[in-house]
Length: 288
Image 1 (tube, rainbow, N blue to C red):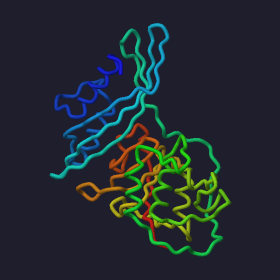
Image 2: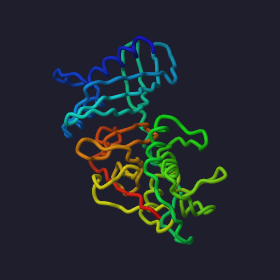
Image 3: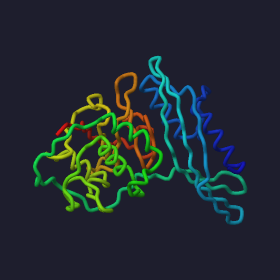
Image 4: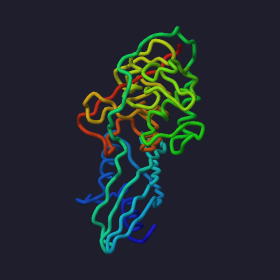
């Protein structure tokens, strides 16, 4: 990384663990993160970060750089320690080595997409036992990379969750109708496999194959269960995560793709996509 970007990067990392009085203009992400942890009686005791330039362009005195940062936070809560990780992609601009802009590239975009509107039951019940351990193991293996056995999407969060559920031996059904069921086959897939809102609708309505029950609070979830997020609160859900751990108070920690993260606190209050209107759906997977 060039000197200007390196100085920016190093200064921001320090803010995650700084005990000094916060000044205006500090890294907003660090502020959000520390406030989120404080609400949970937790703190970041150590942070590591690695940055990589994705692309860079120069136009006269202007320099534009897109870069990726992989954070590793050591969290302390009620005397216990655990590690959270996340990968953030940002764009910054310098004018004669002076920073004039730096922002996250927000991956949680809403796009009009075809999707199921209701679940049509056309198949007999498929017997299965959900293997939560295998689902979580898969979630841990692929949270920050992509399994070459599967197609990868620009917005990959739901594809990743579907892969985790399938690794947990949840059965596919519904092929070749893309609007019903949950499946991936022959380089084709159901909307519920890849579209966040469609998976939410599927989990809420399916009565055969992969099934789930909606519960009222996150502490009722088990490892391998799913949380759906509607950041704007407009009824169209745009992100999904899988529960891979619990914090010291028994609240879920989750893994996700698109904004790659692991062991992240379920509420996403430290996300740039978070709004006060956010809505959640909590689904616990049930055996068939």
